[in-house]
Length: 257
Length: 223
Image (cartoon, rainbow over all chains, first blue to last red; front, side, top):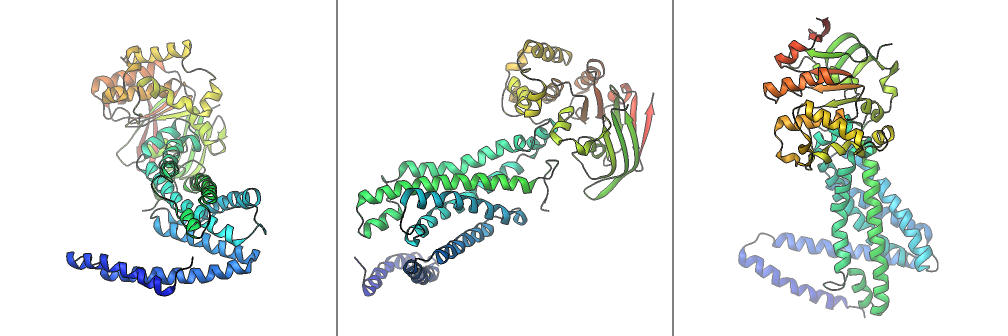
């Protein structure tokens, strides 16, 4: 069932409530609230038109081009968020997000869903959005944890290498902790799904008229893809980061003053 | 043939030249103390030998082969270092000794050594020589004093009987008595080559061979 534009506008009436709360408590956020919601409406409107166009065309190159836009935006977002070793992060992020894309997406569309044609943007783009968005967030967290584990404990690192540890052995504790920290919340989400919240994709499908029994199957596949994608991204990102972070004598390089 | 041969035109740290024209050699079993003022380049010189400071112009050979041609883990498993303040994980002492056994380079060279009778005997000998005993192995590291930690860190390295041992001011936080025990134990019980830095007068008197750093030069003296 579609929503009429006039009806949609009426949903905005609800925003009067937070605005009243803000003005009663004199919280100086009313301007920000208005700007945020206008931005949201404009952004979604544009994205809606673009996706509508891409979905109608069903063109392989157009779909790939849009996926490139998505991954570029993801890399850019993480680059802006992380405040350390920025000169080595670009290749790290491109490599890790790309390897996730190339491993997960073909499996999902060629082996699991098998839409026709196989590159149907209706399937590829929303699923890719979920995998990419989660990978992007988790990878930022994993790299941040890894770097801070290292720099909080250089003495441990140096002690290992002066006793004969190789590069991999010397960073292993930091590597392990970083992956644990970044993957743990993912696993908690997986375990709690359905009970508390219905995930976005499933909500969308059910509202769009799909049967809940179909929607949960997609949801299961999505959860598996997201978790695997996140694991691949975090792992390859840290691997690549190690190669750029240390020189051939296992000594840290690119020290930021 | 010399075990270690150092021929440096220049050596720097953090972009600052510390030493020039350094020509030194060491034979198997030599024990040498590096002396010099703070900031004169003692640690930097020591750290060129295990590739922890690769900022030098010149050549250092170990068994006649340029150290830069060794894999760093291979080199550092044969030239092992103990730092001024040792790093030990929050485990018990036995597990602390086990840490370097998780490195492939050691398990490759001494297969199945950790925990064997020969290994226990060796570790007990060192514990005894350092004035500790077997009961320490079950103690948590957090309960050790500074001096006990330093000795444990030494045994963690000595259990591999490295060809060269580098000691970077390991006595600086220790009381006079412990410091002397460690010095004489290294001179008498360890047959390998040792390069040490120490400000302790006891070490300075009992180590016969010294490298004295003065005005960017290293002077060799043997009593």
